[in-house]
Image (cartoon, rainbow, N blue to C red; front, top):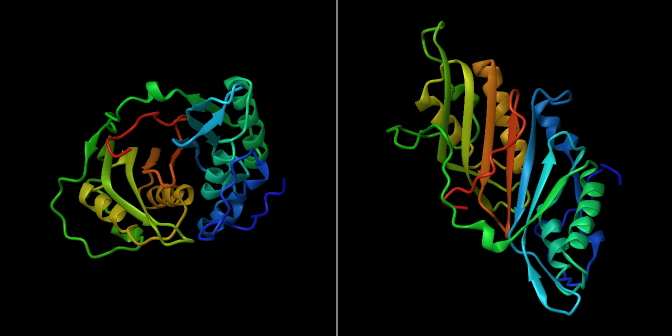
Length: 274
């Protein structure tokens, strides 16, 4: 499949298809999304962790089966799948018979690997095993800081480093105040964002102001987290950096990008709002 962006389904009326239809999937080329960041050779590794909570199919006797679907996509994949098309694709399983869960899993792995243009790891999560969200990001929350804010579009100039140039810090900071908007529909995307770095100390108040400045930013989850990563590398120059965004679900799907220059895998946690 070509990595060229296919016709988008976002913001358009669509038919509700309930029989297995892999052609519903639409792809977006990562290079088109990254062009504005000047990204060619990636200065990070990482993955996008998708979790779809609305998924059902029919067993061999016609009895409905349900599960959540977790998809782990390497950030090096040439393409991503448009979230609405993934929802429509997953809904198309609803009235389709499958012999057993392994057959469903093989089908998902094959279709999604073709569309992401990369091997992906797909898991079916038993509903009883999801449990109540009770995890927390590691490190310290920034949200208690008493700050004044007047910037609501991304401004890396807000970032300030500690005056002591010799002070090296290894710390993890996070906020639940993050918001950006979908670049197609304008709908809000809410998230918690974690920054883990080793390097010259970033003034916490400035980091919070900077992250809040994305409030009216129009961008997809993946490139938004990559923009934060790049801004922190340019303006803070840490030796090690991880940025992890855990976005709340829309349409039954959550997308949680993870980018790092020293860690490989995202934390598989569920925050209280998830």
